Image (cartoon, rainbow, N blue to C red):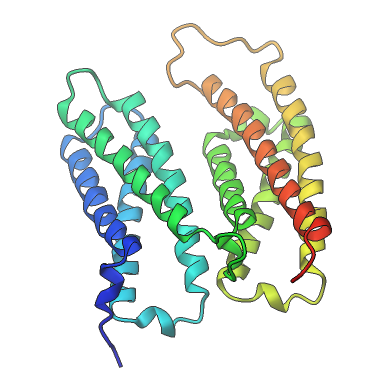
Length: 283
């Protein structure tokens, strides 16, 4: 039986979600009305971001308004927090990519869409801040800092995959190792997120906290090798072409930067894990 929960729309998180839905819908409509003249793949990524955030936010609003979220066999808090974090990252990327490639100084609609997209990013970041677990609170794993870092790790890996070109690494064993590192770490992070949302993480028959700490250390070591190997194999005798504007060489640079960023994220994740396992005594 459906029961209306109007309070879900009057609390701060509910009000923020209403603004998120409206502003992402406006951004999507503005960008769709002007089309694109540049890279179709980047334009499709930006459009997917605004469309995905818009309709997933609407779905969350409807489910909480009708109280159907309580009947779903998932951890709702983990799901909404992970979605807010993912949307924040996706909108940050779209708010940078779209104006860089598609907006000119006289493109008033594009400028307006960029400004509204930045506002959407701020709203989702605010939602993450409101739903993130505070110290001492009992909450789902994805509401904690290590859980949010897992979402960030998976997202950065997605950016790396978008920029990868099979031609650039198919004949170079060193680069193939780097792709293997990105893939393995992404699969593990995604698996942890799925198991957490599905409430299956607690059923693992081994000490999960210590295993995740060990995995984070292993991921750091793997990413260190990728951070060293990728630039060596990618840029050896490979200078930036003249008149290169969003060419494959730039994608190699993006992969190098994202590798460094994910290494930093894994280091922070490992520090949190070590602190929780070895230095925080249970209450």
